[in-house]
Length: 482
Image (tube, rainbow, N blue to C red; front, side, top):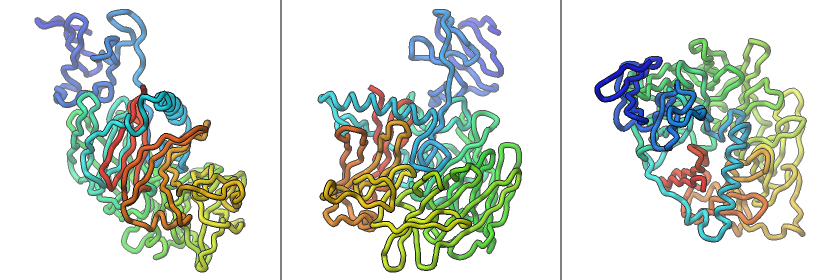
């Protein structure tokens, strides 16, 4: 309902107040509080719809334009959560995120192939909120559409405002977010339905946190189950799950949108679990379990009806995984993990304690969960050997970050390596010239720079643009839709 004011018409709509002057609308208050001037993204803050002029907003309660009478586009949230937009833990995009990414990449490919601009020259460099130690996620946390957040390893949290190009730091109402030490390949974020948008589940050194954001006040509050995180959060159906060590106990912290924190013990949890670096979790092929691959074994949470159980399973004696190489390779039988034995030989084993199977592998490989690469050569399965007559000279070591499901477009980083040794790429630790690349059917598009830990980076999508963060360089790049 609109009330006449000296300066225009005041619309009071479900707790929001908008002032109309001719065809211009200005948000005056949300739940009685005036938004701060630096809060420019009113579609996230109040669900506002874009005005037909493209430069202002209209109340979310308006279904039609007051200027033209045409239907207004609905505000849509499409969360993009680490490691790659979904919660299945593979390095493969899925669902709406996959379609949006492929459409964006195809348009960027046409733009860069035109000859006037390249991926290198067309990159927009943005100032990050910190010089390193950041993880980015896009979520409708506390709002009506997706907003971009940056999480610091020390527990700091920032909100991006695309309208002003600024980062706004969020303050804790009570307990601050916990520190965490996960590298990007081991980081995951999950969400649960919240009062407005989503609540975010994170894990750190002090506990499993559920994060509720109040963007109007630029604050957040945390509900925590204390305990040191052993791995990043995962989601199994309606359950958010976080592996923890609390005192001498190994357990899984459990949260749903309806209930507070609870936990279950981890069967056979031991010091090898505490000392094992766990990758971001993935959902089993039958959808009834969540699995974290670790250096010394795998942690599994299984669901049977309403019951959850957790167990730690050691690899065979003398064998270890390198989780940085990617998730297991998935077939119709299940998930096959690459392991190295004490004699430096490689094996692929089925991640199934009840049905042990394995194949010898000729060398180390990297995997997205669906595709396997030995150096930069794709092979059908990790236990296959690439055709040395056809691929007698691999030129690069390739680390895959993300693959699209439909068109098999790969986003990765590559580096020339004359030694042809995959593990030396991860063990090097010295600055080297690398190429972040997008590979489809034709010639790859590349962005080159020097970095010491090129795999510790993150590709993501937000606001119809492709972003890349290279952590140890503090470099944040963006490529917008042409």
